[in-house]
Structures are given as C-alpha cells and as structure tokens.
Amino acid sequence: MGWVAKQWGIRYLRCMAKEILVFEYSKCSTCRKALKFLADHKLVYQKKDIVTTPPTLKQIELMLAQLLKKGKTLKHLFNTSGESYRALGLSEKLPKLSQTEALALLVKDGKLIKRPFLLSDTCALVGFQEDEWKDELLTRQSQ
Image 1 (tube, rainbow, N blue to C red):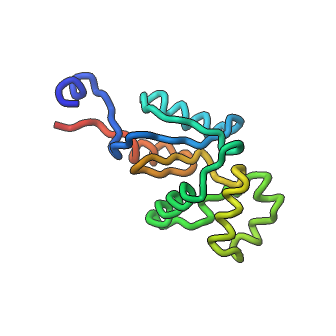
Image 2: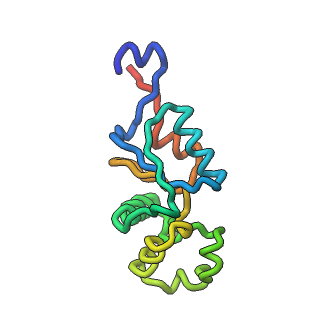
C-alpha cells in the first residue's frame, strides 16, 4: 500500500479482514445505509438476507463474544423494535431465558436479530453506527 496508497488516499481495512459478511434485510433502511457506507468506502463484502439465511449459532456466539468485550449484553443482539420480538413478548421473557435459550431463538428467526450484522475474520459489528463502523473498518495509512 506504500506510496500509491498515500498519494491517492486509499483506505484499507484496519482490521485486515480478508472477507466481510453482512447479514441484512432489504426492507431495512439502516441496512441500506450500512451497505451504502461499505460501497462508498470501496470495501468488498458478501451480503446475506438475514431472514432467509440467518447467522449460524457459531456466528451469533462470535458476535456475542465481541459485544461482551465492549461491555454490552445479550440483549444487544436482539432487534427489540421488531415485530417478532414484540409478538414473543421478549421484553418480559428475555431476562428469564438462559443464554442457550436466547441464542436458539435468534438462530430460528433472523428477524429477531439486530441488523445489520457484520462479521469478518477479525471484526464484528451489530447495528449501524457510522462512527463505530469508521473506527472499526477504516483508517488512513500513515507513513
């Protein structure tokens, strides 16, 4: 990335991700903003529909581990404003569920998962907060 990157201000992945996988929902305006962010910054990614192809248990566990490192909780994985969340009465039930039970719900219903849901080999982000995504994914090469 040397001189050419510096000369043209090319951005690179600070997390050095080889692959970015984004679970999204096409009707979600926040997901559209996140995908636009990735495209605007010329970051290569693969997208999957979170409803038809929800993240696997392993992927959800990876995300949870990252959230816990940031001081967040299991609840941050849930789309608390979604229909599925309300229909299941999870605002009252979630605190009483074990982690295993809660994760099983997420695996069964992608609409329960907060989105967008971005995973790479070194980064994990849930929801789209532009400043957080910039901090995690973008930086200028300094020399």
